[in-house]
Amino acid sequence: MFDPIIILCALGFGMLARSVGLPALIGYLTAGFVLHELGTTGGPLLEKISEIGVTLLLFSIGLKLRPKELLEARVWGTTMAHMAIMIGAFTPILIFATRLLPGVTLTLDDAVIIAFALSFSSTVFAIQVMQERGEMSSRHATLSIGILLLQDVAAVIFITVSTGKVPEWTALGLLLLIPLRPLIFRLLSLAGHDELFTLFGLALAIGGVELFEAVGVKGDLGALILGAMLAGSQKSKELSKNLLHFKDLFLVAFFVTIGLSGWPQEELIYIAIVIGVLAPLKSPLYFWLMTRLHTPPRTALLSSVALSNFSEFGLIVVAIMSKQGLLDSQWSAALSLAIAISFLLSSSMNMRAHPFYYRWYNRLQRFQSRQLVSTRPNVEGVNFIILGMGNIGAGAYQAMQSVHGDTVLGVDDNDRKLAICRSRGYRVVGADASDPAFWICVDLDKIEHVMLALTNHEENKLVGKLLRAQNYTGRITAIVRFEEEAEELKEYDISSFNLFAEAGSGFATHADTPRAAPAAEP
Image (cartoon, rainbow, N blue to C red; front, side, top):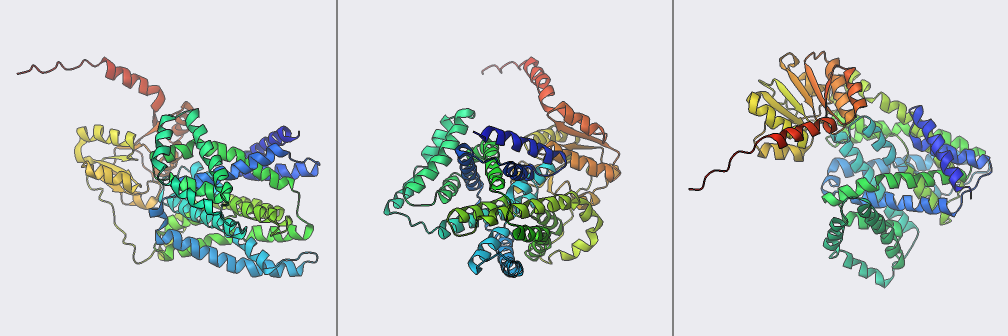
């Protein structure tokens, strides 16, 4: 009967954490600890929501799997090497720390499980940071997400193997799901784009877990596999986006449940604090591995800082191991405290990531692999630059190019978009508009107009601020969707085009234009 009160409490603490610049996740964990002190316990509703949250997390991970990107050496190589080093480092640290404290016992197997959980970085935290900075389409975001996905896959496989669940012979029938893939996509298309589509996605995720469990296969692995079956299509992207908020909402119950389990014993609190303080050391290790595997220093720095924390997925691993009786439940509470500390420190590091790169630019370039060839983009004779070559940017390019010719340049960081633009004969270069190294190559005194058509408002604002910081005094125009976004851009002398407000007038102009008379037939 306390479930509604628990949810309201989670909301309050989540809002409080967000108001001081921290991830809402810290608020949810805090809410659980506070409610525990007040003697509150969670009911069956909270437990069920928690389970669905984990299911949707795994299903969403499957939907995003792209083997081509994951098979890049800098993705799988960094992931495997980092996990191995972290497990090798944290296992003896944990054993040594527990032997110094009375009342705490830890076997070698237990230490390896906890070290394995500590080797993950937080998917929720990293994505939130990059979304807030407007960098979700950047190369460092792609690299970070690839590493996080491989870590999550490793966690699911570990959970499946460690629980020792032996599949039944009927599990062979799961192979029939492969030829059913086209039928599933036809049903997704039939469902449209609204609530029926989202409901079908929920049914696939939850039904997939039950199906796999029925034939003796771990349901967590089933959710991941079913999601991976649908990966790589436009429908899978749409489904992932529709399920995003449900997943995040249901995971709130999971984090609150961890807090409700109570504080760890006093000795484990000391260990949790030490572990949490060590989290930022993950960042230089990530950076070194990435640059050794031929990642540019800027991409490596921003990726490594985003990954400088412990993961909610590690918490899920420890919690499941505790339920299986393979680990003391006290470690779930200890790990949640360590994660909260790592988030606090990682938040501070991410706020300073870009200034740190600008300040130490020359020194960081020393880490660049010799196999990376630095090429200067061809910006000769350019007077107009369009940043972001999606549908809006490409349309703007066509209109500008018809008037100004080859003095118009398109810029994007997405290889697929660049290939499409080049096939159409557009003049484009591949570059990250938020990287000062790109603007060093551009003679800003000759640029008359920069058009920001990037993926979101935060990204447009970030690049606009960077241009003004480079003493660019020319015209900057950005696409906005809401009036408050336009007001924010005025601070940097950036004019805006409201996509929603002005689309209507453009449509009316198009509709009011008289049609050309059809040519007479010969």
